[in-house]
Image (tube, rainbow, N blue to C red; front, side):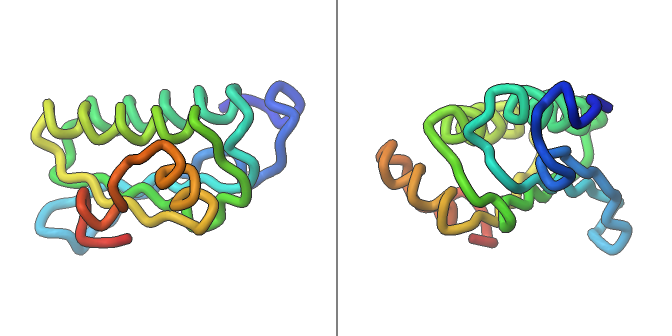
Length: 119
């Protein structure tokens, strides 16, 4: 894991991954929050999601509910996650904050409810 000083961030900017045992088969959840305008935070988050996707779980839940700030880098990352998950046959569920919804709207990306059952 990257140390806080390398990212200049706080604890919630470090992605946290856990297993969800009650899904039909064990799935993964990746949660990240704080200021997602920082490229180091986005890069670390992206790498964590890639690691989880390569394990080919039936689903990955991405929790952005505590994201305070976001920009187009996060929007591009979300699109890339959705595409990679689709290519691998992994269901993706995304929970976003108002900051995430605002940047997706700015980028003319449809609401997350079109990609997932959770928005």
